[in-house]
Image (cartoon, rainbow, N blue to C red; front, side, top):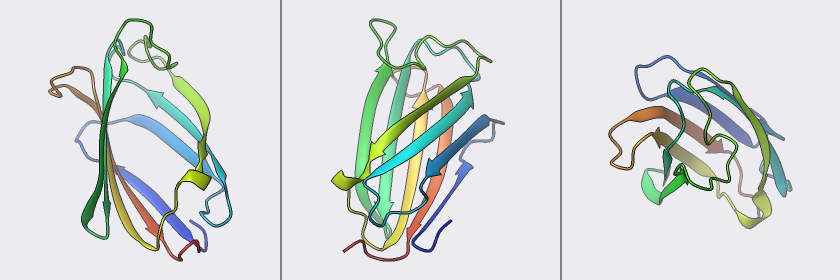
Length: 136
């Protein structure tokens, strides 16, 4: 939480998760790069991973993105191939200069599936982002 941004999350399924993330700086004003640190202990082996990312802005659908991150062949992400119970700890930059977030409420759902048919959900997060002032 900061003077211009509030960010929180809950899990959207009934399973217990070992998951944590940290975003610095916690601000959207004049910050072209954010650092995201993520720690997760998956509940199953990660040989296949499909993510779905949905965003609503003030109640209106703003984004729906699907991507297979791990297919089992020539995977480029460090989470791919991790075993059930193995700690995944990673950090990366998000280049915020490409994104302008107008003032308002953002509801974000991030789901992870271990199958392409989206039947076996291994992670589900409900994120709430409140932008308190326009960046311009």
